[in-house]
Amino acid sequence: MSHTIEFLLIWGAVVVAIPVAVVFLETVAAILRRNSSKAQSSQPRPAAGILMPAHNESGVIQQALAALMPHLRADDQLLVIADNCTDDTAAIARQFPVTVVERSSDSERGKGYALAHGLNYWGGSVPEVVVIMDADCHFEPNALDYIVSCAAARQRPAQAVYLMECPIDPTPRDQISAFAFLFKNQVRPLGLYQLGQPCLLTGTGMAFPKDLLTAERLATGNIVEDMQLGLDLAVQGYSPILVPGAFVRGQLPKQSAAAVSQRTRWEHGHIQTLLTCVPRLFLAGLRQRRMDLIALAFEMCVPPLSLLVMLWLGTFAMAVAFFLATKLPGPLLVSALSGILLLIAIMLAWLMFGQKVLSGRTLLCIPLYVAGKLSLYRRFVTNRQKDWVRTRRDIE
Image (tube, rainbow, N blue to C red; front, side, top):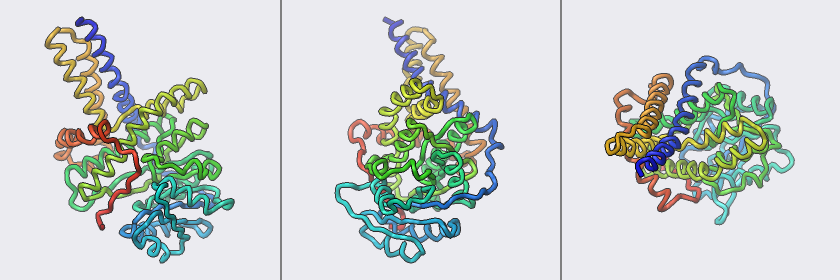
């Protein structure tokens, strides 16, 4: 009986060790060749069409448009889709030299439907490269040029490095959340880039050759529509590529309820996509003999960092209890090794990338942050978020 339990515990530890090994490999790859990812020089690029979906964004859209204007060329098109708005988002956007369309639908709500509406508005005159930019984000210098040039040259989706800035007077939770975001959206994708592999799409700062986007493909209420879109395109032969020198930034919501809503949407959507898409990606990669799909499958098998820590803690606790009862060390050795690799990866990412967003003192608060996520993951089982919900802005 003890050997059967040992076998099951070892396999449980191995299941957790696989995503830990992926995180460790990506982190080491990002650090070992970190200096090779400097921003490339600006290259001539084709005209771009920027789609900016906006649902009740009156508090932030003026700043977003003002920041975006200097990045546009004369032949670029910027289309703001005021989607199911009950405020003056459209009126504010019309103060700028942009095209504004308004959309209203009680049944089709979400970012994907807004983007599809914008693409339909352009009809047969879609610009050569389409960029998706959220109404609460801003590009850093040259970022728009970089991703448009990359998408046009490679004929693949191009993803900027999307980071979150802390609000004024950030709490420890804000800082840790910003670091987790940096770990997921910069460190790990940079590691994949250095290994010659594609990345996941992260929702904003994305450029697509026009032939890759259709209204039918975009029109979805998926709460992580960007992630799903990237995986669908990858299976069809158009794996997204990171543009390491291009940065787009947003800001974490200060309000506690808004922050919880945002994290719930991201993480429930991530877990659901993990459960449904990883087998499909592995099978497609094996069938098509494509390493890029297999790499994306391994990337997708990594759950949100807090959940990964919780899973490791669970397997480690069971391994310790089993060892104390039987003196059989197998499960404990596997679990301990994966825990060491996970700790090294987190510390390396913090040392090389994260010290500006997360102080050493706040780093010690990570266990409390992880514990605070228990209810979020419990709700995935008991009350999973399935509908797209906009994040409430602090200014409201």
